[in-house]
Length: 176
Image (tube, rainbow, N blue to C red; front, side, top):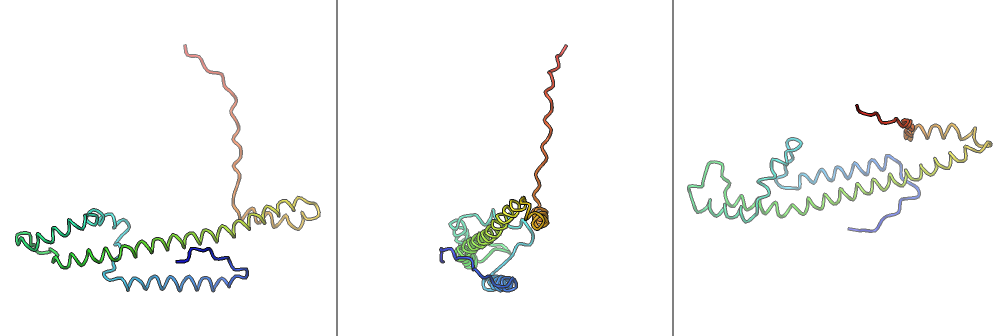
């Protein structure tokens, strides 16, 4: 994976090309679901917490129960997993955990790229706004820039909170 930062293009592609590129990648990522054997998704938000306790037991514990199931018929029950199936599930978990880690890292990098793009555009917009505010104070430019500055201020949406009046010092009351 390349770690170098790519320069943002001087002449950007059309917005529809950016959206199309993003949708193409999303489709590829979603297609990966079909590539993962035994792929499951949470039935509801928080479903993963229900899995966590049993999923966090050690592989050694799982193997020891597999040996016990294979050697002690009394431990066999209707829904017990065959030891070979249990071992295959543990192999699957060991093999695909790094994929989940890589996808988490990819999501982190994409989020950083999104924040970086927003930062660059937002920083440039704030610089332009500050320059327009300053130039609008000149009498020869005020008429032309004032409507733009007003629109920018409104679109920015930041408002300064009015200073709260400082209460006058009240003398302490004495208790009888």
